[in-house]
Image (cartoon, rainbow, N blue to C red; front, side):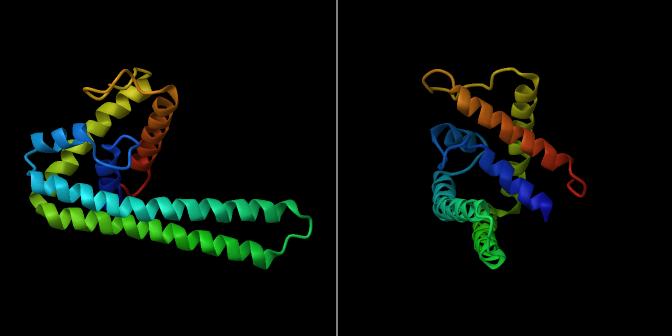
Length: 174
């Protein structure tokens, strides 16, 4: 199960912190042999899931803030704290389900052979980016992009790649 979750993560690392597949990623998919229709459909699948994920993340932040506010009080109500935690977990589940649905839809759209090819290509690409990020070399700018990424985006990309490395090294992941 973790393997599929990591495959899903690798697929969407391609979007480099954006919410949609941009022209650079579309060109990458074309090089891998995807049709315009498949690319269009992948974009739709991703955007559909991202809408749910953005809303869920906002809701989780609200519950976290409410929990922090509650914990400031010396007489914090444990039942109220549990309620906030349960509501945040429910939204986490919605995020995971959106991610799972997105992966299943994409895999069904592409078929097993194309899906496996995409996963291999993205894993290779992620490894290259990870090694560059961990070595301290600047990450390559997207072709046609004006200038380099901002330091904040560069730092965030390094953090995400570090998390990916930790996930790949965790027990049970092959």
